[in-house]
Length: 252
Length: 334
Image 1 (cartoon, rainbow over the protein chains, first blue to last red):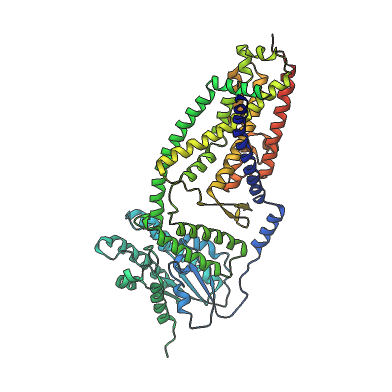
Image 2: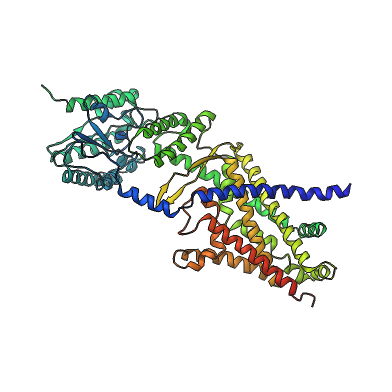
């Protein structure tokens, strides 16, 4: 009797050790899989230099900026919707959450060429949100500073685009507020401040247009905002698209 | 041999060493759990702030939206195949949460257990094992009980071997203790196991950019098994080293002191890995094996998991060899 029990307690830790052994082997295989080989390094360097974007094509339209240019919250962003009637090629390099500084950094590496027809930009929203912590805090100094920085960055962005594509038509999307009730007064005020900045910057450029959205959302906020309370939904993008259409469709 | 091993284990229980380790684990894991709870609340608030929403209760619609965005990104012709694999993995993850109706921001026992292993692997666990093993020989020399062992008919190497084997079993016990205590405490707090939840692994850093070609999802329990297996391996390394020092030195405190200084001193030297080739072969810098699995950007230049495991195995062999050599020759009966 005693003899049997003697071996038993030895068995249990042995079982654990075997389980550990098997799992360790699996961990090692993952460790091997993530090992960066010389091949990987060489391949990635190759990819960095190759830019897989379309060659010179007439009528190219660049879409840049933040999540509104990506089309987050809906099926298709407003810019492509507005241009859908025409047969155009789009190069959409927008990044969610981008602030004006991110866009400025991106411009250098963009393959903008002389024959770019249009550049649509949606930017500034995240600058404002970061400075106001999602619209909840209003610190005059912080927001002022953000506004000033946004202005100088926007000027730089336009300048850099112009160097590469002097003839392209620029469209910059305006901001809308997320709260049009009296309690959101400060937020509304700052949205308008940023919009004013954008418009003033665009004044000096004959081929640049500001696309207002403030009034659209003021009238229909609850119907055109997506469930995250931040981005437009399908209907929202449709309405912005219609507004852009009005601006770009030639009148007879 | 089995009776020798049994004897060694009984001695350990007698010394109440395991009881002390048990108590330390309970206190530390308890504190860790308390801290985690604090952090969780703060993380949830921050995420809500970032998303600009009132609360994170409505995670379902946010997930649905993220899924739509990701699916659209998959259709973008400008993203290379490798980038798409990470999008697919993320989609899998999100789809899982939606199907199982679990909020991705939740706290679970599985996540807690994993995080505890990650944090304790390179310092706290080694310290525990040093505590466990450091006086297996030196302690007996100072109390004189070693003479009782040595004057029996058993050859010296068998005696040392029984200690090593007993240590292997005790180390497994410590790891299992750690697992059960962290499970117990976290389950008390979170009431949710979360073992089936997905865990993503397989991240590579190539030229300072994230390479997601090898990325895949595994269930949390699988990750935990791997984490504990790695922890056991580390325990075995530390045990082997501690036992060797214990053979060299006569007093327990020197034994513990020496081991601790190598452990802590070694982590300072890890600063020089890039420049001083010699530092790569120190055991301390290779302890954090789990970081290769979690993809934390800890992997310093030139260190791969295979290399670290090989170095550590080297240390095990050397320490084993030296401990036998010295133990057999040393004069401990004086």
